[in-house]
Length: 93
Image (cartoon, rainbow, N blue to C red):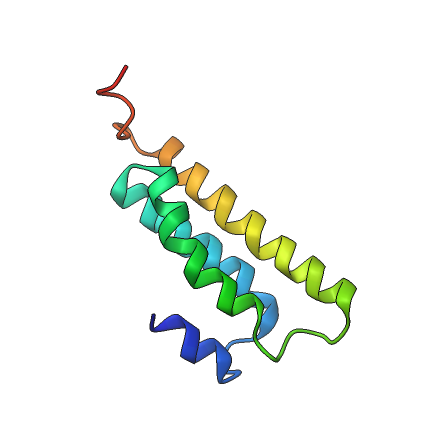
């Protein structure tokens, strides 16, 4: 993905990564209409962003940063399916 090399080059501050993941997850989920499919797409993109070198050193900051990124893409995918008028689950009901 294009976003991973940009963030790994330290061109984006580490504090913005959860917001970028949230925005990307919202957009993908809104466009596709599914949250589970978006989670399958966004998770492999978000994990390398968490493991980059500019994260503060130490186990606790790494866990907090990882938790923030994980929750940002989970809430982003949920928001996208709730904001769309006709999600993919509507025809199934």
